[in-house]
Image (cartoon, rainbow, N blue to C red):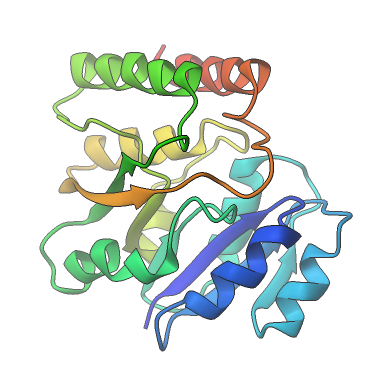
Length: 213
């Protein structure tokens, strides 16, 4: 069953809800990216495999998790309780069935889950992606799945906020079948390091704009 990579930076409030909800057989790989709130200790206590990514950055944590993964199929999802691990089969299932090569969970936002500035930034970003590629995606979904070795072979270089976009762009250039399906998106636990602030959102947009250029 798939490995689930969970980049973590001070998510102790959310991990106690997330980890017990993983579907049977899915293995949690918690990538601690510099937490000082006990996130790593709690994840270990709850049975997750915990590794450390000392270089700060979302892409750095994702890459470390991908290197540690062993299953043929890997999933990625935020560890802030905005996504329910129970929905992972929605993105992993089509990969296992051979229906597509990269499945993204497009966010079906619940009330209060997606700040306006972050939603507008996502709309603008996806419009650019559609303009510059053959993709017709509506969201750069944070819950996603693909096969591990082909994902490694894509050679994703970004180690900050551009990682999710670079994965999609490289997959499209490599001829992958990229698809999306809706997944519920809930108000997160605690404050987001990226979309929770205008500054964080602007940094993420800057990283992704550089990739598009």
